[in-house]
Image (cartoon, rainbow over the protein chains, first blue to last red):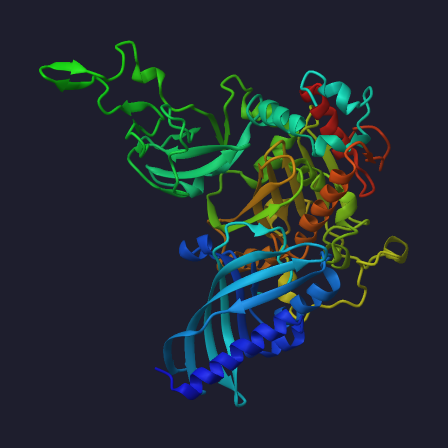
Length: 163
Length: 418
């Protein structure tokens, strides 16, 4: 088990992540990932059947930057507010990372995402579970991997922002 | 609107296909007639890919229109389809999305159906023995063979499964027509398919708008920054916009532009980003596959239920599942070929980022469809125009044309009799 100090740091990382996407600070969102990041959104059906398709998969820092640019500059979409609520992390393992550079924490958490469009009621956008791998880089915790597995069978039209 | 007066109520004059009454996207009677005439009669609807049910006993649950149907491979290897509706209490008995079974049992009263949809077992059919005599049970004229599940006619071609409630529907090949069939066979030429996975979205618009979106080359080179900027689909792309003889199906075939965009083509086009460069260019690492021929993209609309996408190295079927006049579920099944090498496998997965509910070029399609429906709902007696390229329904070869949309409505008006 991680010590309290480590749990506090993980909670702080989660909170920073949530803040970045809820505040639409997508450059900060990119910075919360390690130098070799992996970010994936996929349907629960794909995840459980081990099907490789993603709703979105970003496997490099460059791809993450391109997504941030896409969100703000290239994808036409309805303006909306996103409120991402993440539950407490369940830490499943802590081990020495393969790179030999410190430890690798694997953890999971539930998330719910609410969407509020202009002139509309707030609605549940999607719910699901994160599967995370967290490493330490330059003294800070970073996501090496965040896989967002969505329970919701139907995406309400389009997913623009990261979840 | 009364169904008898539907034609009068819509008020669509003569042979016009270019000024479309908005009530056809919002009216319940129109929608009910579409389900009856387009989805439940006279047409083939998409059910899935054979690779989803490779083994005897494998089944998947899907829909034709709003009806739940089951597609299953039986012990002989044949593919059967029937409605997910118990003959007894008309319950949608199959709740699993997919699986492997030896038979189907309706949990309500344990009626048993085999994998051909035949009724095999009715508990207490002959009644129960009480005080030495049989009482209850089905009347003696009840025949199990007359009470099976409602069967679908099934057609498979190149690993794709289609079904129809209409036992008298023409052959699938005649249904597509010679030329559209050629484009269908270009992708599904017998190579084994491998399922990559699914994306599902609910789009709050009339289902026909999705068909129109993929019969509309005009928007693709304007709305979609990635298409315009990287030349995947642009005003200077060579293209062919063809239809089957009935004009219900269409293919938009295009060749991507590798040259720099001419200034006059993109001046004022805000979606064109001349200085946009990807931080990670591997996202559009396009490798020309020999089977493409001259076209780098073929977008097929197979009326009324499916779109088949080949856009560079990304392949998918997109199943339209209508849900009332104002919404449909859009189910994407991405696939690859079994003989792809590892690089091509990875490339297809990466290029899938362009498509689906978060795709660089598809997310905004869903958005504009929703906003169109909002406009229609507030103005059902208004009309919209599809005049790009004139008023005709002939084949076209430029981006600035809406011929395929008009072609679809020529057919739609004939079948709907409005």
